[in-house]
Image (cartoon, rainbow, N blue to C red):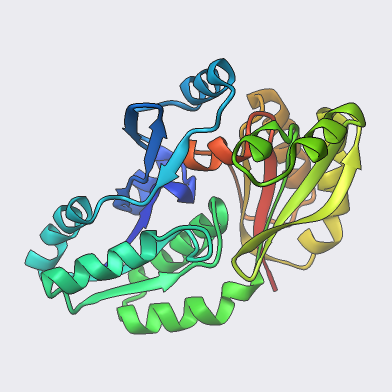
Length: 281
């Protein structure tokens, strides 16, 4: 009997990592006007930003439909697999609850749904760790237990270039967004206890700010677990590479992964965003 680790499209893992670790990914929905797309399948980040700017609106996002989730899970149940699902945190989406309902409707008793209390590669870090545990032969129950013990040590933060998308999505006021643009304020958003909040505010052009942000994280990075770190972004590839090279130059991590954020995460943070995500010791 296999233990399969599954996730959703908000994990922001690269196609290469998904293939390497053999991770099934269920897409969330992106709704742009009368068009509904599946994250990671029907729409690109570039198309999302173009639509948002043209319509002065942020696409809506939603959990997968119950029937779609049941169809996604059925082959695993029929194969006799034990499944552990880790996806977007329950404070941020109803996706985990939909997964539980689908398992209940199917009578899928070997399904474990865990709240990652995170987003983006803050999920991805936990998913890859779960895959490591599964490879070691641990049961689904033991994998969940170990992940829950270390969940509070995931460090997920991002610096945002523009507050326009946060405003369009109702996460900050028009006045805050306007002042942010006028004074070149770049907020650092951190995830704590499954919720997003402003941890710090930088000022200046985003290229300079991201270097400050990475440098400010150095003490925490030096107290990180050394297996993996993610640089996840909606910025230019050149900017992301520069930050990833800096992180790699510290000589702390075995793997420094650079990934581009999917459309669910991108629809809320907008272009020019970059985050550094890791486990603390």
